[in-house]
Image 1 (tube, helix red, strand yellow):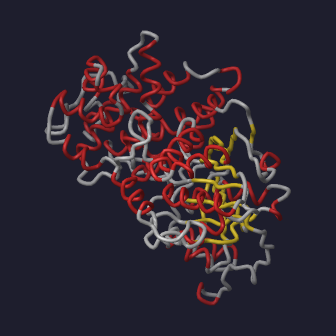
Image 2 (cartoon, helix red, strand yellow; image 1 turned 90 degrees about the vertical axis):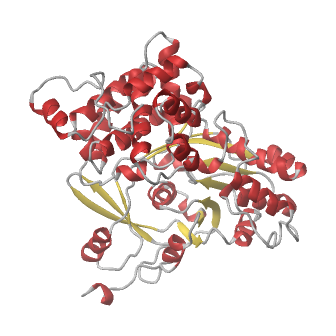
Image 3 (tube, helix red, strand yellow; image 1 turned 45 degrees about the vertical axis):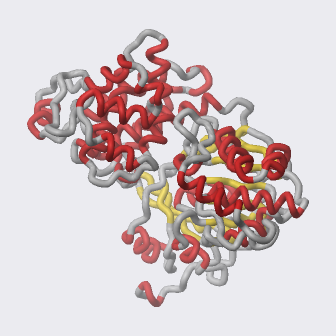
Length: 496
């Protein structure tokens, strides 16, 4: 049969039961489907826990998934081949702009958990971690909330908030109005202490709007921290065609993921939760060491490869890791980060070895351009803590400084940078030398730009990663040093 003649994946063709909605998710995308939706389906009490998932900026993912009754295929892609599994834990896929439906579901007493994959930048905190009521997105939502008509328990204001957290605050107000009781909010974004970050952002936004709503949230909402891990690249047309050929049905929304997955949670669930731990999740009292291991070793290396790899002409993580200069930069950063992780509990050598294998899986085309987005927010969690920790112990922090330098070189050669501070980056690129480095570092954190030694260190690292082919050939073919501490090769007009 051709693709048009094949049956479409839905619950008529693939009769998975439809659980009642008890989880609301904000940020319907590939990662949520490969991770939280997978864990929920594999929990032994999955029949009691359906997910209603809302998109972010665009409705496309919800429209495609709703046509399939929420079903989709996970392509489990290892170096040896692909396995396929139909996931049915998402029972409702909704356009994020449908704030009325969000309020209705969050205010239902059956809803026990709200999970978030909204990206690091969406929490809208200032560089010092405080709530930033003056940011344009937050200010816009506050104006909408303040000028709204009707009650939050109905459809909400005539004009609705546009950010995920603005919409969630309105929905939590609806839950308060409905008397539906406590609920847990679980951040699944790559932020250190992401539960606390979510609390500051949500309570801060609520306080700026309505102190009574803020007080109810502070009393009734549990903010759970979690560390999430599963490499999930963008799905391609070839992946869609492979599902048709191998599975015998049409799925317009398959997800590709590596076999590895990890979820660590810490916090209270006052209205209950699925038994995720029976599906392999880990529940701990102190999540910080697990967060730091993942944020620094996996996400930090991803950011370093994203900028260094693209500077050197690579497009995927696997390609970049094969470049000796990129690989040595990653190992140097890992050495610095590992010095600040408790080895006895986290099995750091084994974790690093597993990352080498995962990053080197060429069948997972994890594109560097995808990872490179939102650098000012990501580097605040991935490079800054390691650099500060190294310098506090009297070491230079050259490995983490190189990550910042690679970002500075990268944003200097990109015409359009996806970042919440993109306009400020463009302005900074109009300066040169140490002034440019300091201005860009200030966008990550004033803690960096206020230290002249750090500015000089990062400036000295700029230009050490380059697409210059003769330099790359010398480093690779001669068998000599590929250390990033060698004299910088300056890119005219883009180095500081």
